Image (cartoon, rainbow, N blue to C red):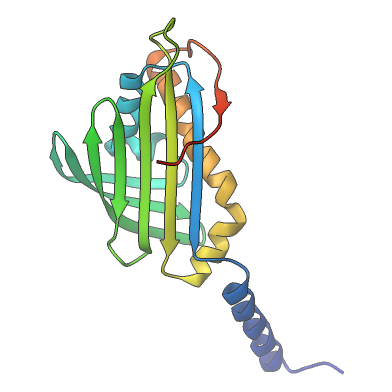
Length: 187
């Protein structure tokens, strides 16, 4: 027996709603630590260069600085991985060459989004190294966005992290050492 199209759509939508309600938490978190072949200041300059994110950061289609001071900026970013294209505003706290922290609480796309990059000295014998502590946590407002993000979350975050290191290579030349994964430390 074949169901009418209207019944099939209802059943499919009902199943989809159930999947999105139960399959993923709206909260996501990622923590990583790496020893890399660029100095604290070089990596700081790449990560703090929010205006150029659209040129090298995957899925960032727009990056506009709205307001800037030496220790803080406000930026509007547009992210897109079809069918999702959204924009949000972040406050970015700058402590050169140690920390870049972006906080979004604009309430449209995220309940919150916090990204922290900490840069500390690397090898004593090589000033062109540093340790990066990268931490991101967020909660989407939408269960739909959370479900889509959960499918790709690990890959997206690792691609994003890698994009900053590749941009450092483009700006400053070949890394002095290869990337070494370290045990993350939550602060």
